[in-house]
Length: 296
Image 1 (tube, rainbow, N blue to C red):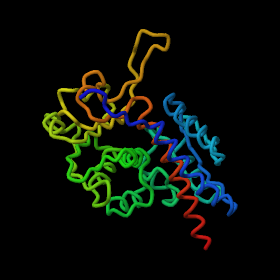
Image 2 (cartoon, rainbow, N blue to C red; image 1 turned 45 degrees about the vertical axis):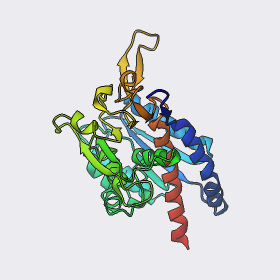
Image 3 (tube, helix red, strand yellow; image 1 turned 60 degrees about the horizontal axis):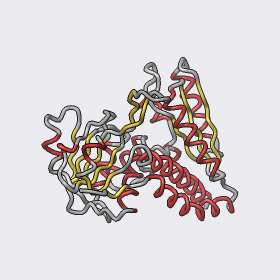
Image 4 (cartoon, rainbow, N blue to C red; image 1 turned 60 degrees about the vertical axis):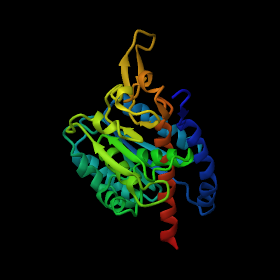
């Protein structure tokens, strides 16, 4: 298909921020400025860029954000102590621990230490459980952003076959739940494929919607999808290129081979990434709203 619909994360995120303004104003009228604490352990360049991007957006919206950078040798105990302190600090409504963590730190133990009502990433087992029964408190940011894409562009999943490629707790598992929930805009029939799935193309060729979140550059090719497929590309990968930068960013889908077959697609960059940030802002505002409701 020629001229596919480009699902612009930049455009949709601006719409999200505009809709959040009234909620932010209401909170400030109640002397509450939504606040996010971001913990970064180590000096991973990609994580540093992501944290800076988050901080920039919060400051643009006049929201509170504070980073807590720790060196890569920080002990698990010291990190747990910091999280405990932030749990008790009322100026922070959300706590985000940037993943991945160094190998000597148990990521799951760290996630479970965050107060569930401050877990704006939606990774705590309590929040994951609420999502699994269709009654979410905080939805993980990237899956939430994907669903917002579909709603914004009136892509209804009812009666559609959705194939999710990837099974991480960050994207694959939660988006498989969200797409199959019995609610407006969802209610799809969802299949999860992963590294243990033989012949993934057997599934993607049958899909009306493919959500690819493997972290493998150009994995999904035109030969793996049917005409008219909607492709949500979660991947953002650096590959070497003979340019001034020395690299370029590509997704998990091979744009060159899919562009004539898809009916709609998210670009990389400028697709899912901006929506992930927008949903983090929204989740932090929701956490602040919970704090207001607890006052009443």
